[in-house]
Length: 463
Image 1 (tube, helix red, strand yellow):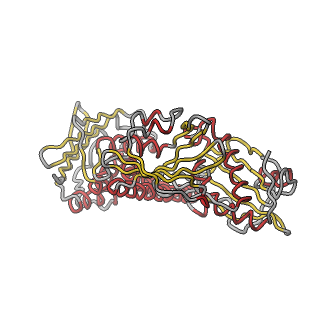
Image 2 (tube, rainbow, N blue to C red):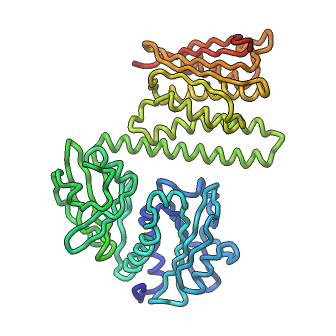
Image 3 (cartoon, rainbow, N blue to C red):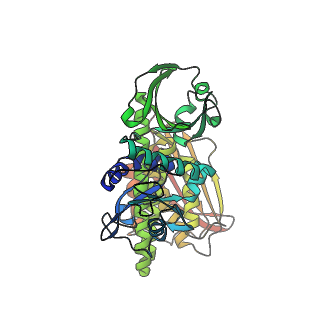
């Protein structure tokens, strides 16, 4: 049963506008807010989690702000307005190639109001929320809706979740405050300083921070912050904001205030957003490819080039070392994507990297582009004759050596990659010799009676 709300519709909507971003972040779900007016139901606002929104770009959102609801287009929302009850949408709908489920929660002016003034529509990625919140998603959604209704009544708001801030959900009893859920960012922030950080659920909060120096920094009742703490250990400073949901549940927001950590987190977020933007470009190229089948090959090449850059940014967004890249790991990711793209998953691949090779991120991006062009050329122009490719990567003193060999028949007699008018070889030549200041050798070879090519690139790397 929900608590009665005895205020006007404008106040309800204003309160929801202030608080739904907090809910979106905790539930890792996209939210659309619909409001009822005299002339129909309209989309008022939408809220996206910073870490993993369903929508690749604003144009992909189902409705624009101010657009009128079409009942056949969004059945759960229409039904929630008509019935005044929570409605669960169809399981398995797809948005941007991600399987989702929609939930619609009505918000009225009083308990069991048959004429809600607003409906909150959650769209959650089934896979992501299952991995993050598991079976607790519905439970948390119900609790947060009740907390929202209370915020509307008492005129308070939730705080904004700051960039790089993790969250612990706490169940409170008369004797203890136990961790009910820890999101991945909270686990990551605590992993380097708290014991057993990967086993947080079920543990008392005070136990996790038992070895820390703790200092109270006040509270903020208007934002439901019951306590702000600064805790220190091993030259690290963590700020905890305790946010009350109800008498039995609270949220602890965790932020690392250590300057170095903040810089790394910001850079990781930049790489994460660049990667997302590149994925958006890839999605647009695929859409355009379907409309122009006669240009399919050109679009595929552009997609693969963009993806090779996106792989570098994806690696950097997840790595603890944002300056250097394990290039052998990146080569394997690039290979897998290209083989799948060309339908060559069964091709024999011999990859030899005796020891990890770390190179700077800018050099890694350029080298990934070069390798993408070399592999693409082999897969594109040796169909039916290719049986194996070999890649060898190693570092010798301050030089990184990259060898590529195939048995796809080799170049035609008289071929000179320096004189080639093809864009692929121009990219290889320009990046390898000018951007990377490397030494490039390309030649025909013969092995076990089969002709092929060998590419040898030597790139100087910083110490």
